[in-house]
Image 1 (cartoon, rainbow, N blue to C red):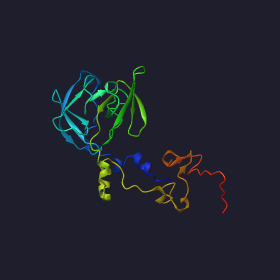
Image 2: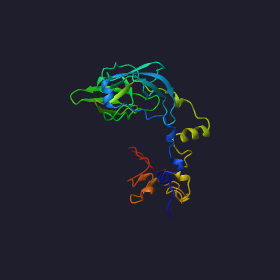
Image 3: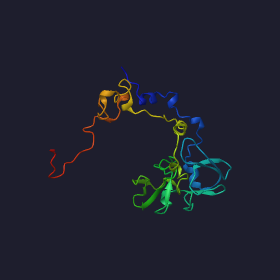
Image 4: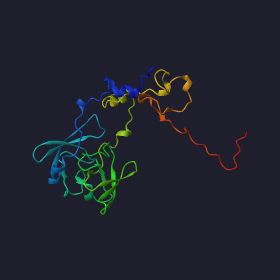
Length: 249
């Protein structure tokens, strides 16, 4: 008998698992490369809340009176000017190639490949830091919020500053209903039932007989039933015996 696993239902894409994309404001990507290379300025005319992301968006007005969205930097306000291009100054909110950004500068919305619009560091309150420039290999080394280091090409773009909304995680949800609405706005399922709390018919980890067992699946299990650790060599915390320790009671 097949098991109605959560990942199987999500893969099918029923109504509880569909993200309400009609409510999303913008993907907040950078402008095309040919437009960016010309350089220019934009003015912040408003701030918008987007349900799909934790950071607020800044609504910009370009020189040719077109509207564009970007992830808002902390400390920005309406009527501020945002400059972009290779010759833009290294100031809060400006968009530059990482080659032109000085070491130690906080940046966000960083491209992995020139022209992809921005992939890294896009959540509220986050920032990466430019560590060094390797001019021989034409690579920039940045330190991500996770403390990991990444190398990206000189042509990748980034925004100077820290993303706004840094105090978001300090405010508790208080009620389960608030958490439900927050997750629902992004197409996330809440609340989530623990696999070990399910019945055996609903999940491989469910049922009384599985209490205390490791969360692992067989390697030859069908794709929908591969949950937890896949054919692990061992599970659990490795216990080391100290020298001279006697296990006898």
